[in-house]
Image (spheres, rainbow, N blue to C red):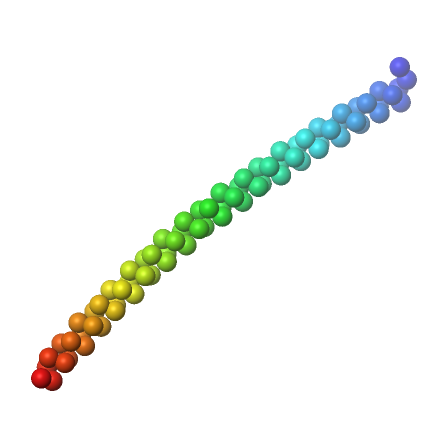
Length: 74
């Protein structure tokens, strides 16, 4: 075997290994992005529910105040 053939095979093998590592990194990156998006969606839902609850409480308190003021007028 010629030295050139050995070098060529080593380069091919190295290229294959690099490509394999790239594919694994892309897969991991995709999984991380998916998990991050899912976590962000959960946090968003929690915030929206909390704000909705706070809004309902404010609405209820305002209604109570309004009724109290109406009773005072009567």
